[in-house]
Figure 1 (spheres, rainbow, N blue to C red):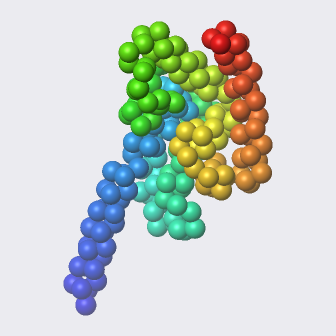
Figure 2 (cartoon, rainbow, N blue to C red):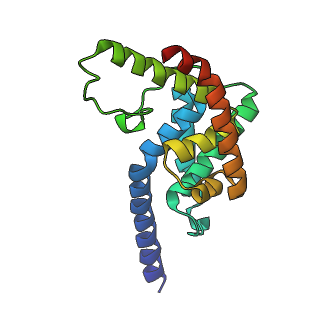
Length: 192
């Protein structure tokens, strides 16, 4: 009997390992990109991403399945980023972030852009200004903008990820967009 229980426990552990490996492979790039956008500090982002998956592994047994796995991972990531900056009592460093093409800001089709160097330069400058403006937002506002507008999560998913009501998410998005509009207004008026 003891041998059967041991084999069953071993098989469960192997299945958990395989499930977790799949979870990491499926979500690591999105979680890393999200953390990069929040921290704008690639070395910190790598450390925090590892910590997200360590925490996820340690608490897989407690996952309630009432939220999507990626929403659960975003929540862990958000909490870790906030904790990291609260502990360090510092603002994120301004380090250029290089992420996958799918993570870049405002991808615009290449038609016409490649043949016009001035348009390419303007687009690059706009992306740089938008990224700079997003990085200047307070963490609570930045996280909802990144999750909703850049990662494509619904209001409900963002609310679960950041741990607040949907109304608060909408309010934070409104305030974040208002701040972004103000920060980018001068740039947009100058380029038109």
